[in-house]
Image 1: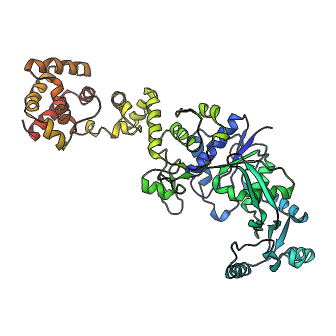
Image 2: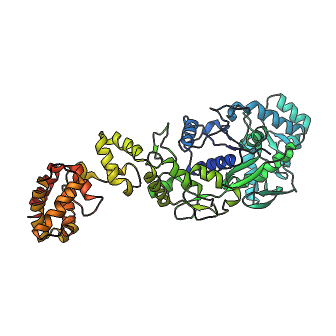
Length: 499
């Protein structure tokens, strides 16, 4: 059997990071099994359609290296890949179910449906719904008769098509992650399959498309697990073999309780979308992992391990590594806690792994000078989590300090420092080629002749130049600043802190 999977988002807004993980797992499984990966846009609910959302989904997944074998912008033998363009197909299949007695026409108005629900609630019915019992009090094929129902449909009376759910049937299926699941049909209502406007509901369109496109495995979020029995019923109604199901665990809030939401990102100051999203109506901007400085390799590695484990202690995986190691049977049943600190840890690793020339090119765009970019990369590469920090974490390289760390000054700006700093100035003035080696040699050879151990005053020297007591390689900082700027800053510190 040739494996075929799909990712089927709705273009109703930005793609949540949980949806990205679903797409990633489908992609990894398809590649591992040498199968086909399809992108299908489920846009049957046109009232919730958001302009630009489909493009955002494609661009976000492309940024992460998640590509498709078939889809709206790729093409393929199963086109079209937008459900709004397949409307006639769904009606054809819905009518087929009506003809076979597996579905029926219903003519109830919104007011009549509301009255039915209120009556059931007043009677303390646990699960008030339109089902095999309650439908016998409503306006549909069962109560009106087939001829009358057909006449009303021919006359253009507004109607929907509902699934004829059997009253007493045990539904059994095996989930590849959650094992055997048993549900009784009495808990399932007669879902609407085709709405009065002729558009299919999610359930009908989803099943028809999965069948038509030959989907072998449905890998989707846990939130769709309650719909699985209904989908099994639909497959049975059509006489089709259903695909294998795998319902992924939820991504949980950082504290581990409840599904991760946009609000959690706002409260925790982290993104929950792959890329920045600007709402076309409200203008509200939601931050993205890309714009926050995360590398796509880091996001993929981070997400892959949220719910799946390789069975080893290995944590760092390239996309190729993930494809080779991935298997559905190592996906956890329980939810995965979203730990943004772990995401940062991954990003730090991948920043360090970037070739220097790549980092230099990125930094040069910000500082406008190749040599300076090279020096900054050399200085900061091993110390940063995000590329932007190569510049942002060393503001003192671009502007002299106005303030000095009081805690450091109180301990390190002592009599020895006050004695040493004028000597350091004299020593630096003798350095012709002002680089790390020559500066280090001048200080380490010059200070001992004044009976001063260099190590005793290095923190005071750093304080005078940067305003803080710790940081990256001080000698390289001095080289980047240059002789004149360093001497000027030491003199200013002597005036400010006391000579």
